[in-house]
Length: 267
Length: 311
Image (cartoon, rainbow over all chains, first blue to last red; front, side, top):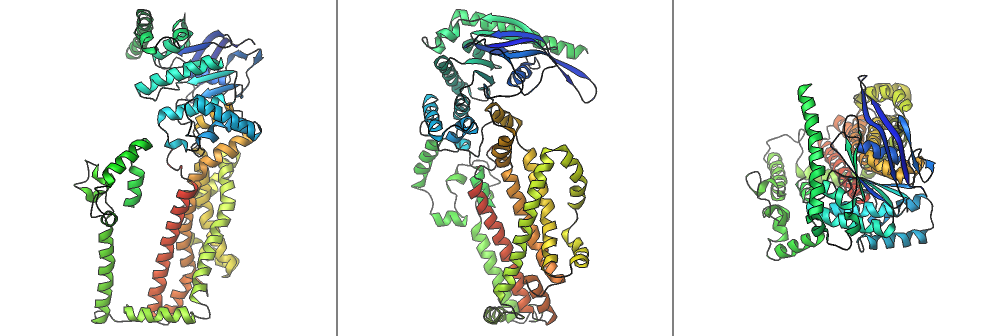
């Protein structure tokens, strides 16, 4: 078990008008098994491109991605994905959404039922199994998305702003759930988010990316995720230490945004 | 229509909350009949603070529909009984009733009334079924492969705006005026509607759903079967509904041109014998069946694809 290894990854998109955009340049990262890494950056820094390459939806122009020693070539059940919204199958009930992966793999019905039941309980969805997913609130839908991903028991979970569309209160609750699921399952997780607070609270490691071309700007090792289960999330987020890092990262991203705006204004 | 708008426009809330509100307001609310008629606000319209003037923009207005129908029949009765119009232009209610009895007991021109109606419906159903059987796979192929899209696009796009009735002369030249001719016409009328609907359904799938399925371990075939197909069903069903409507109009017109059976031929032949009452009965039957088809399709839709519009 080697974890996730991203080596010298570059991605250039060719535009229809003949132009080229360097979305990623020389990105290298290593994630040990069981680690949770959050990725932050201003829009256009290539974080979603990075995730899509790791998921196997995009092939990089240069560099490679390895998971547990073998190279990533295309999407696979070993790498689960949680999207922001709208990726649930609205024609299926909650439990059938969760059962999707095991069913595609041809697992026996009894085993699937057991997995689904367990996951509905873990994610706080007991009693909602036979509901259509479109009747659930946004927070509940993301619980289904998490359960559906876990049902496949993937080695790596990729989260693309999973809590981005939720209201502030639901978001905090769901952060607690993500943290607890991560601790209980010991999964390796890459979390992309726009929220600095969320990135700091959940990430053992934080990667701040810079735009044009998308690259790793700075990496932090953070203590907050480890304390997240014992201490109350509110007190962690209100602590001097947390606020200090938060302000540092925020002004870093602000500066990048200003630079983009300045360049756009000048050019 | 208003009814539908109400149920679709209802804001999504948690079940408990909704139930609480219903029970709180249901006890002292207006009578069910008044709400059904649209002369009283129901629990939904009452909580709307911004309306077009008042509740009349959201209530059903059924009372007025009922009054309109009564007024039309009264006008009919008056106009024919007081001799405002000659029976040859518009028959009296009594004549129509008498003729309807005769049509039901004796039939019309060697066929019972039931046979005339059934053959028209049968033609539509067969035409739409064949159109769907060919059109849906064709639409899927066009939505999934650039080869199929490239090959069929000019044909489909060219045929789509041509009214099916314009094809009748060719169809008669090729197939004569028997059953094959009519079914072929209806097949063509529904084919392009179904193709375009299926293609639109395939293209409408959100890429995140396809990505989600792949990262859950689905194969290409499984993505097609378990994601793209169910995702396309609402569009396909809308296509079916449109095709049924278009084909019902087309079959009647085709029967007006050449047929010895069917509701369309019935009114055309009746016209030749100046049987205005039979013509009127035929028109009413055509209207009622067209309306029933629409209602039936809506019912099937809410039953088969309850997730429509909820993505």
